[in-house]
Amino acid sequence: SKAFAAMDYLRKVQLESKKSKDFVWNLPGEFRFVHVQDSAVLQPVPKGIWVNVQMISFADLARNDQAWKRDFKQVEDFWVKTLGAQPHMGKLFGFDASAEGEVQPFADSYSCTIYSAEQKSSFLAYRDQQDPEGLFATGLGMKFLEPCAT
Image 1 (tube, rainbow, N blue to C red):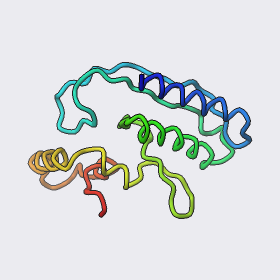
Image 2 (spheres, rainbow, N blue to C red; image 1 turned 180 degrees about the vertical axis):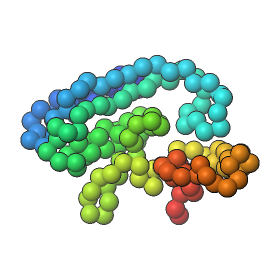
Image 3 (tube, rainbow, N blue to C red; image 1 turned 45 degrees about the vertical axis):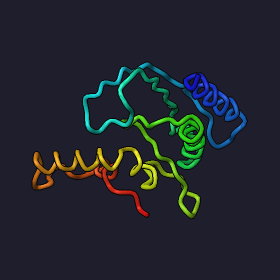
Image 4 (spheres, rainbow, N blue to C red; image 1 turned 90 degrees about the vertical axis):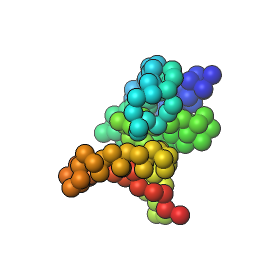
């Protein structure tokens, strides 16, 4: 199953990190089952039963900020590109490397793909009605609603 494959890959990366001087994973992976209803315009997955798999670790124990981000990116790349995973919207995701090689979460190239153009349009129309002055149109959430750069 994809759930097993996700946890198995995380386990593999965690075990490989034991040889690293930069970053050693220090917490186990976590998973739970989620029953998604069709009740929101902005939901990254269709309704149904889903497994939520999370990677967690204390970043403060890494040699530097990039060490743990590189490992997180490696796991996320496998989950998204190989297993077709979607992000947990309340966690770090969208790890990407800049031209200089610096890895950061919430890359524009990924964040803009979470919701379809139809979802974005529908939500923005509703938001414009409820918040016509844009008082709450700030922060990371707005990044998800932007069109992808061409």
